[in-house]
Length: 591
Image (cartoon, rainbow, N blue to C red; front, top):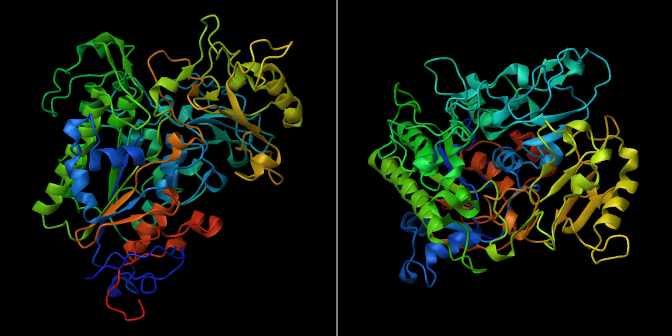
């Protein structure tokens, strides 16, 4: 079937024929065209620049030759998008939901793993990361108190265990979620809000499942079952979620990982992300799940199952390779310069992800499924800064430029669950961005004045230290409204929108960690510009330079499968477009 690449953006609501999909994909309910399945892969942190360098080669690395041969091969039959932007904020939670819903936080309501909702009440039990439980606080149909929301390892039954504390014999998934650690909704009898119902829109998994397609997904937390979308959590037929922040343990099913290769990072205080070597073992679990699913098995390889029509996973190796300073083995990740030459530590992580994707491609070929599978590779987020020398974290060292954060400056104006003054809480929502929800939104103007006066661009008499919080830009009022719904309570505002967003100068991060030299979450180019490649053996190589967004992946996947992109709530509400450059021409002269 000949392929015609076009740079004109296709309307998200086009039917299969008008979108240039295979003729028999339209009118038959979908899933019956030449493309019968989509493998969606997120290589978290993978910049467009990383892909340029690894697929094209760069001097000083691997003798100048490409160092991701499998991605390079996929590029030869793929559409490569150079100017791709993730969600803003560029956190994993909104980044993931953009990929699968076609929407931004404005519509989906997912701002960050840890955020705030003025319309909900706290969980019944304190979460694993310190969101304080208040069992008697929630009363049906009474005004809410508001609460920090948490959708990471903190809602696991036991976050220290690889299976999240799921019942014996289960390897995780939604059975690992503790309902008592979920925020509660006083407008709905104080019911706990499960991840798939916290998000406000449906997802590609829900649409494909409703069309009688088989679905699967593997990710780093049980909480990321949010990808299922509203319902009962079963829009994903096979969900796998080994807990990434559990204590690392030997993995008998992964060659070379029992015992783990890095024994310096297996203490009770460690997580899988603390080691360049152990994170490869962790990601290998999800890679094997994909291989099992390709081969007609469930993720654990124990039962026969259809090869999914929609499936995929996220890689953590590259993100760890970009961020980690592993002092115990005297290795530092990140980049050697602004051109994105990876350190040896990061190079090894990129090569691992590439080799793993090569195994998936080989498995598809072995089963004769390659021609009928579209492979989509992108990332939930990037990482900043690429130029590692520009990294600036909060420091108590005299004369260091960054000594505080916006949340610390405003700590007395924040809800106690969000305040740095809370000694037992989960803390504010700050990485290389600061999201600020005030106890009283009416104090927004005064709060902005405090930020500007206590952390001015240049030293003043009252603030001789100058820009001690590294503030780059402050969004509030109408400045928030151009990005998200205005903050407030319904019907006049969005209970999840921050009152103030602070984006710091490039390289500044507020985590306070001494184990990192990069972070994500912000709006910067390095945070948001990620790789995006769509590949199928029938495609001719093409490069699209017009700006696109990762949220355009969702409607494109549905269109390729012969399903209506308008079935996605966020596509209808935000007008999200199908990606340019992916029109399949099947012989119509007017194409």
